[in-house]
Image (cartoon, rainbow, N blue to C red; front, side, top):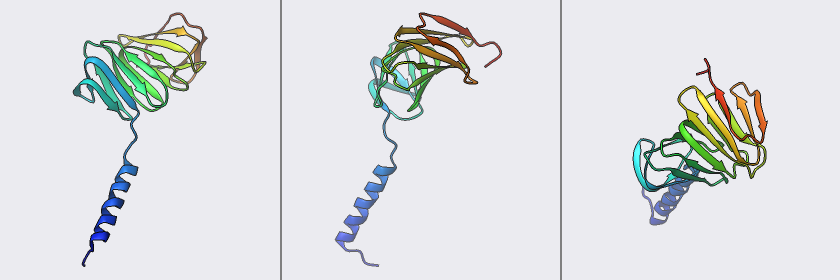
Length: 165
């Protein structure tokens, strides 16, 4: 079969378009004044985040700016998985602002904002304790079964996960 130059160009353009459409859109950007780990690779300065990215801070706090609005700050000893609609905090602490409907999961608990402009802090203290505080606005705390445990202006609440994990 003989291809003309125009046919080859059309095939290349179509192939590039299909690859671009199939590519997963970026969730946002992570930054640090130093290095952090992203998906088990060391990164200096900043990196683009995709759904399911694992961020591990290594002595310096990291900031996460998501395209859908939320801003997160991970403490200097934090590890978290970033998804489009939630952050799964495995260790350390995370502050969050402008959460909208974005949720933070820590152990057996799910934290969400009552108002879109709420600011909060969630900390994993070992494997059995989670602390939640509303820095402004109000938060809701649910357990894994979806039962509402707290709703309002939380200054600092601690939850123990006995026999849950």
